[in-house]
Length: 465
Image (cartoon, rainbow, N blue to C red; front, side, top):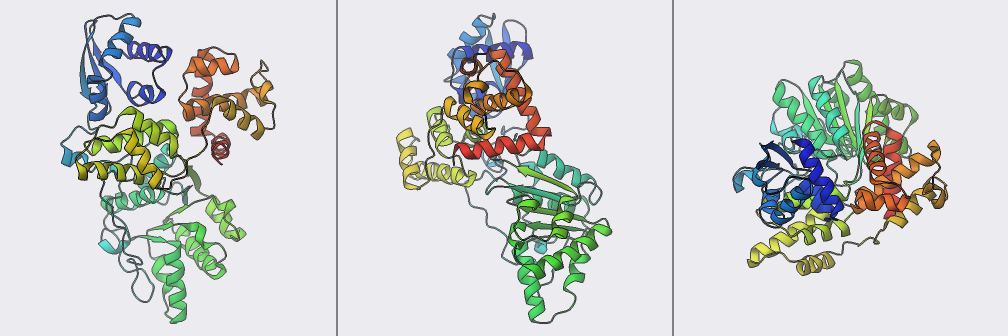
């Protein structure tokens, strides 16, 4: 059955269906029952079902016929547990960025809610003043290719706190779900064992509490932190340049680790790139697991828009989805903000979203539109990154120092432009199966090889820099 659907996907690519249509609907669906005349097609959510029942109904029949299965009747079912409930239930589900998909703004915990006036931790465990936002849970964090490794590491910490990945250091750009993920660990541990002393804080709060305690000559600051079972610290990059705070945090970290207590940290950059970080603290932070969360690619950005609008009860036209995903690349919060504005505007006025309205709202939001990309630009940027001649990279040389950059370029063209495999192949004078193998190989390397993951991330930044 899976092979039948794969044949349909291949036909969709050959028929030159749009990249987002293939990525969002065909690749995220599968045939789960087929007797030759009738097929049950399992789709991701209600939004996908609507698309297959309306706009994609005729193309689906044509593609099945081309794959060798004419006249097949379809029943569309939603994958179990994926947005199949009532609207009120669906509203609490997440989108692909790891942020809650409700259109309502979530209020953050009160600033310094975790501290009393002396600057020391106040309450722990499942109590409300441990700094944890109860809405940040694994259940509403959607895993994608940009965050799957970080998600897996966080779950491993929940299974054995203090034993694996200690410290756990999650880093990445703004709005990618770092805070959600590290707080999800705290909430999962508090639920698993309410007796645990858990504290979530930002490094700025730690610094302010430390300075406050020193100014008021309050004793016991360090002891309160060192009684914790789990310390979760956000925005570690802001400790740069604060020597006394670094020293205090270093000793707190050492004390907790020696007692096998779990330390979880997030930052916008890895330890080695935090300026003026002392060598001994940098060494301690690097001795556990440091893992990055990347910016979602084009396919995932489309999925974020489709999932979020679908969960809000709105079916966006594919043209609108593609337009927003293409024009907002640098920040998921900006993407969500523009989408929320569009949905709210239409809801208040009782109108349907249109591409013209999406363009107007995007313009008014002052989100900078990046340059339009094409395959040649990606090939040139990739070649320049590896100090290669683009012509050599597109040639027949199969040596490793040429083949790997070529595969990375193919991967970026696929993920950023959603170009079909045959079309990518023509850019490199190769057949579509060779391109498919290259893309799959880099996709797998990104999951397991930090250096390739970093190279792809660096090149992607240069594409829009």
